[in-house]
Image (cartoon, rainbow, N blue to C red):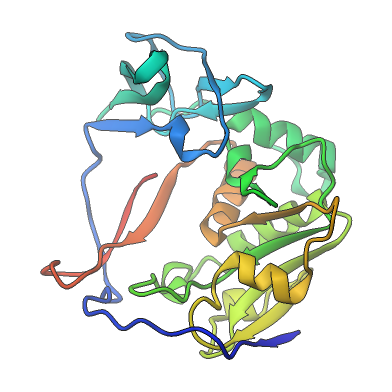
Length: 281
């Protein structure tokens, strides 16, 4: 499907990242913020001083305790930061120099069912990467979405180049698509930039509907794409994910570990060397 947008504007700002990877040391402290998740009320599972591995549960959703939030690194829980009325603002882990991972059960990818996928994503802490529209909340695992959307590009200023980020990850990305597509009885939409020549990892993807989106910013916005491709009507639910979350899901099911690493672009006119870095999200 081709979607051509005429309204909008591309914002030009200096400081686009070079197509170069740079190394960065693991931060001494890593935090997980419940405030990053709309309408989430956390219920703590750990306390200050506890030792956790990457993938161990830190807190759960008080309204849906099957939705778990797990540690991105191994180390000691150094602080639980609270605000007004003891609202939990952040859980901070003092990271080990080398991350130790909790071992999850490895699955036979050829025999995965929807129930097993949901169960494992909930257990691993990866479920919160799946959001739903309307309202952009964490997806309700009891719902069956009419469609799943993945935007393979961003159109905003200084947006990272996903073609560069995903170079060489064709098999992992396809594996993640195969897994995620089982969560809906409808279509999984992979939306690519019609203004450019997308990499094969996106343009040659199988088992999904590839839509080319043409036009200026906000053509890469997932809400705009949903509106033009499969609008939400009363009672409808649509789930959506970011491309790097597809890779994280694939790694989890293939290797049985929760890998919270992510590639970002450090950009802007104030940055001396704008490059790409892998860090713990």
